[in-house]
Length: 189
Ligand SMILES: [Ca+2]
Image 1: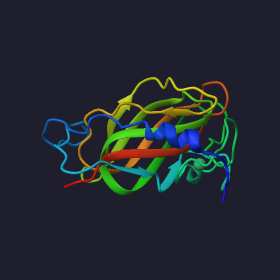
Image 2: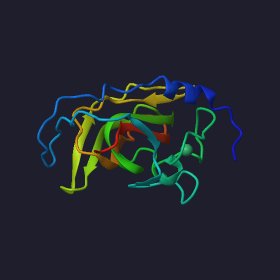
Image 3: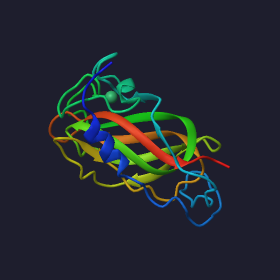
Image 4: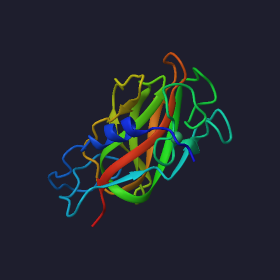
């Protein structure tokens, strides 16, 4: 087990309460963002438990699975404990993460440890409709060192979803590496 001091990362994540999960009710619709139903309960926070990507620099170190669990990359810079694409400037890459428990997402924290700023879109998988639902699209302003934690605002995001796809533009300078992904959301029903 690593013995790195991850206190700054953990504290930075704890400060994030996420957007107000309460929102007006709305009708469900396939592939179109909708307002989630008013939550009845407490938001839960989960680290990604599984991950895959369009490419990865290595089969173990730098693989997509390095995104799962809490942050474990102790310092800014290249690290095999983070996902890294196979090619430095390969264009658009997708990183897909799964949660132990589906939620109506209200917040996400993407922990970047090198080449921060490459995230350009976020989608959630609507299992019932078998479509990716757009949750956010824009510019990632995060930068480091010492650590970059990008929290794109998630818009209307019903229903509960257990898979999320992060689109990364690797054309930015340096390698785009992601250490961990945390989801905040309301459990269904
Ligand atoms: Ca990691």
